[in-house]
Every structure is written in structure tokens, then in C-alpha cells.
Length: 255
Image 1 (tube, rainbow, N blue to C red):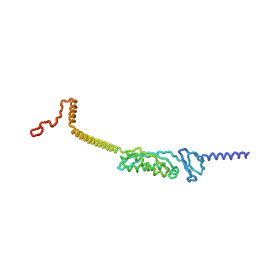
Image 2: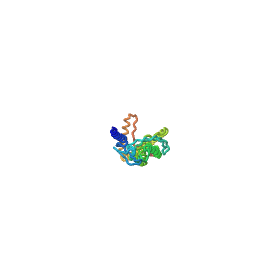
Image 3: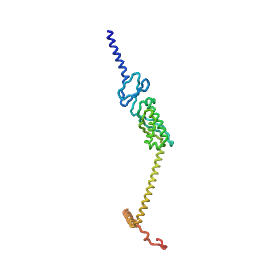
Image 4: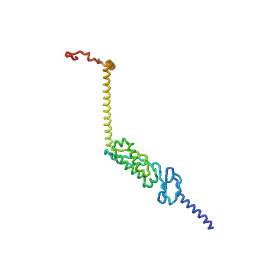
């Protein structure tokens, strides 16, 4: 009888041991996941996606998500090149392209990217004037993205896009910008008016030359003027009279 008990105990113990160790040895990585495998503390390989078998207590696995991450950069106090204080915030899109470097070369790559983005945002925008921050956001986004991408390459991080969301300025500066825009509109109106006068003068000179070459055309203009006066129902009609028909005065001038 005791022999039969031992025959049952050892297989049961073996089965229990397998059931305890199996969850520690079997890993399943999703399509967007990778596992950085360390064997006795030393890097051995990057595993995934799919099924992977590890040696329990000898190999450790650090999972890494390869999907694009979104990092909101907090509002930063920036002094522009023309000494205007503004608050700027942005959003960054990045992803892990090399799990080995992302895990080994930096302790917390997401925190590192966030801090680097804040300092880069202040340094880049501080080199530009306020008008450029407001009107050339696309170019500034590209500049910040390229700088971040170069610096995070050693961490196995790819910065895909940077978008400046808000540029908040003081209320007094808003009024100053409004006055500047109004002055600019007045300047453009004066320039357009002057250009119109110049073009009208050029057309009048051209018309005068054409009328000088064709005297009959001047008579037609006289008749058009009389027609316009008659249509206005006025009691006074002015007849244009050539200066040659006026009588001459005693001194040879026109009376």
C-alpha cells in the first residue's frame, strides 16, 4: 500500500511543479509588443511578436509597446526674440523603433522625451519673434521635430510629429497687436488709393492723347455730357463752346 501512494505522489508533485513553472516560462507577445530578454542580467535578444519560451528565474523579460505615444507638453514660459513673454504648449507624437536601446540606454524614455521636449520648445521658440510664432507654426513644428528626432535617436525613439497647440499672450499685448493690425490696414488702404489715382491719371493721359488725335471724338463727349445733364432734369444747361469762337478783346485777348 505505501508503495502505491509513492507512485501517485511523485507524478502529482511533478505535475504541480510544471503548472507552477509554466506561467513563468511561456510568453505571448502581441503584434505591437516586443520583449527585451535578459539572461542572468545580460541582454540576449529581442523577442516577439507571438509565442516565446523563457527559462524561469534565469531569463527576465521587459515588455515594450511599439505603438505611437502621445505626450502633452505642459505650458512653457517663453520670451521671444523681441522680448515678449508668452505661454506655449504643444503635443508630441513618438514611438519606439528600437526596443533594445529604449530599455537599456535610458531609464524612463517617456519621461526623458517629455523633459527634452520642454527644453527644446523653450530654446527654439526663444529664437523667433512673436509674429513668427503666430504666423509660421508649421515651420516651427518641423524645426522642433527635427531637433527632438536627432537627440532621441540614441534612445531608439522616433519623433513623428510635433504640434504647437496654443500661444497665449498678455491682454495688453493683444490690444497692441490689434492696433498694429489696424494701422497696417490703414496703410494698405492708402497705398491702394494712391495706386488707383496713379492708374486713373495714366488712363486720363492716354484718353487725352486719343482725343487730341481725333477732334471729332471731343464733340461726341460734348453730346454725351449734354445728354447726362438733360437726364438729371436740371434747369441749367451748360453748352461747351470752343475757345476759338470767343470774341477777342481790344488788346488781342479774348473778351
